[in-house]
Amino acid sequence: MIMRIGTAFPALWMENELKNHLIRIAIEEDCELDLADYRGDMKKLWNAFPDLDLAFFDYALLREYKEILSGFFRRNPDCMSVAVGKPEEEICGFLELRPAGHLGKTDSYDQIRRLSLRCMKEMQEDFGVLQIHTRQGEYAVSVRNILYCQSDLKYVQLVTKKGTVYRKLWKLDEVLSVLPEYFIRVHQSYVVNVREAEGFDRSAHELLMTDGIRIPVSRPYVQSVLMLFVGKSAGSEADSEKESAWGRT
Image (cartoon, rainbow, N blue to C red; front, side, top):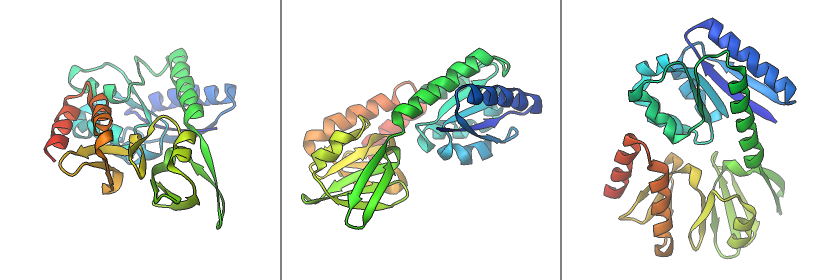
């Protein structure tokens, strides 16, 4: 297992202290570590967020980048965020989007270890691979990278986040049975990865996915889709406003 971690702290000694703890944990747990140090640059951390499993950063930096806080979750809902330092009421609410933890200091080895192990556990549960055999060959597709599945009754197309399409003689129910619970059926012909869903267009009955992709939602599934977004938006004023925007779309 490779755990991809990004850190951003204004003080070099904080970066080094945390890095030493993480290296020790990786050795103890026999885990490969891909560690990127952004030296207090939250914009670089923001750009790297889609490729991270765990992010550590200083609360002090968040004051300068309040406008991007709600965007962290949408960039990568699988990444756990850990803020270090003294919390501030006006900015700590964003952690409710993807609760991970809070550290008082970077020398809290036991807490860092606990958060790292939690991240590893989630990765082990989520790091599934779907074996696909087609006329063109055999493929191993990372489940978490599947965006949606579309059926034309005879074949099923699996479309990944990068736009790669795998076409196989399969039934949609068979595909759904081997995918984790964050894949749900929203239409007779579509199964989607709800972690990649950004909103719901009520007037068009379409699910808004990343990269502007729209997936039709048939009436029997509308209520379950709406409940999904109520759950995702709870606890955040920014998300409440977004939910209202979805309703107005």
